[in-house]
Length: 264
Image 1 (cartoon, rainbow, N blue to C red):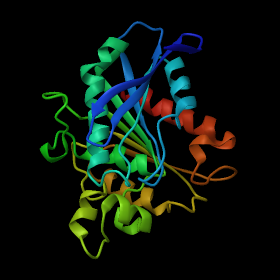
Image 2 (cartoon, helix red, strand yellow; image 1 turned 30 degrees about the horizontal axis):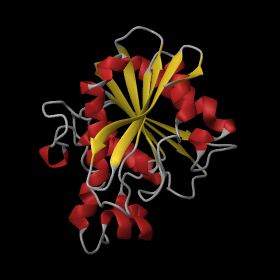
Image 3 (cartoon, helix red, strand yellow; image 1 turned 30 degrees about the vertical axis):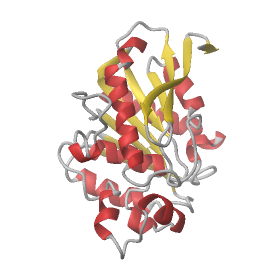
C-alpha cells in the first residue's frame, strides 16, 4: 500500500483469481471519501496477446480523485490460455468487486467497466454475457458479473472482421472460416440485448489498428436495444492510443466521467 496522490490510497497486486497458468492480481485506487462509492474496472489492451495492468494508472488516479474506486486487473493472454479464459477472468474481477470490494469502499450496486482495444472487447463481452453460466468463474458463487455501465475505447467488437492473425492463432485459436461460431461467441456485436447496460463508445477517426467501423456498427446494434452513445474523436491524437495521448486525454476522461456520473 502506498500514497500515490493526496486523498488516494493505492493497494497493489491484490490476488483475485487462481488459474492453472498463474495467479491474477489487481490494483485498487481507493478515494478517501467514506463508502460506499461507485467502482470502475479498467481492462487493458494489447491485442489479446500482450499488455498488463498499469496502462490505466493515470485514469485510475484521476477517477479516484473524483470519488470512484478505480481498479485495474490482469487477465490471461492468448499465448497462455485461449478464449474464453480472458473473459472469465474479467468477470472474476467484477465479482471480486462485489464480494471483496466493499472492504475498499465499493458500492456493489454501482459498478462500471472500461476497456481499450482488446480490453474493450472483453469489457463489452462481460456486459452482454452477464451471469451466463458458461462464462462464469467459480471463485465467487452467487455473485453477479453484471455491470451498470460500459465504456469502450477503440474496441474490437467483431473479431472476425478484425481478423488479426496473431489473435486468431493464439487467442481464438482458429480462423473465422474454420469456426465461425467461436468467433461469434468472442464478439460482443450480435450478443447485445435489452439487458445490456448503458454504453459509451469512443473511437479515434485516425485509428489504423482497429477500424472505427467496429464502434459504429456496435453502436448501431446497441442503439436498437439500449441506451448507447458514440463519440468519434478527430484531430491531433485521434489514433488507436487516444485514451493516453496528451492531446485527447482530458477530452476522453471528461466525456467518460460525465457519462459515469450520470449512470452510477
